[in-house]
Length: 398
Image (cartoon, rainbow, N blue to C red):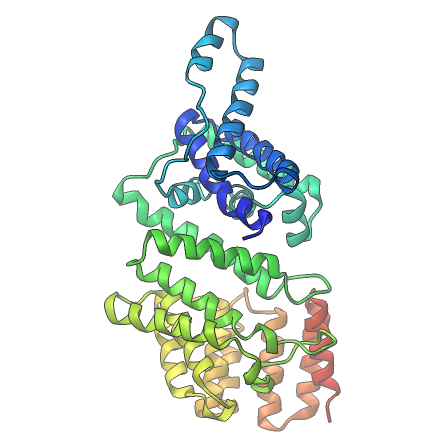
């Protein structure tokens, strides 16, 4: 494992130790970042220590104490010095879930939850997060700072919530990880379709969560969904970065190991737990990934799964994806009728994805002129450069 990878893996463990020991999120997180910076500077020259976690905890604790000394009265200084940790192994307890729950505290906005999770649990620097989310460094810095202050003002403690509250907060954690993955897999704006650092980080953090909660169906479902979706990434763009739709991808380029792992996870999960939204999405992804050719896709099964998903977790994207599946089962005319009804939802009216789906359905129905107009309208409305290129290309096809 490289030093960078080791530091990213150890960052949440070190922060969790400090939070349990001292409690103040902002000071503990700052001390952890300073320890990581010291390691990144010293380890390449001196070599990685025998106990890297213990080294980081010791340095971070010293940094915390230095900060405390600057802010506290002299009469309390000796008390803290007396409890300074000595170099030694970090506690074996896995506090990843507790830290994730704190970063996804309900008092924070989704944008703040995402930024704080990437910083505190993912170990990304402010600059890395800013680059990944395509916002200025200062914006991310302010977002993280406000998030830490909000957590402090809320009185939140670094501990597992009571069982009645855990389920609700765990759903928030899954939502944040899902948002991070989706933004990485299909960037909402900018010149690149992907932000691989986000998809990789979302998968890594979800793996950690799955190790902590292996019997939770939705945690398993989310990990399976990410693996089955990301498996197609090598075939999703051409050499020039142009987007390639699922039906036209070279499936031999798909990551067979990720498909196998994701399929095994969702198969086992659906057999042992009650199905939830992430499990249903993973099941849909598995059906797609198991088809050797586009024409082998089991569209009736996919439509059935979308019907269930529409009941459990309705959303505009679920609606559009279900309409595409409906077209493959019952024909484009039936799907166009449903789309016209669905566009009564303000979330879909005027959205570029609605135009893109309409264009696809019109193309299936043989109305190339109308399809061309819809493709161009969708291209004007999206902020993603690769999507614009793809939609314009579809409009210009003979």
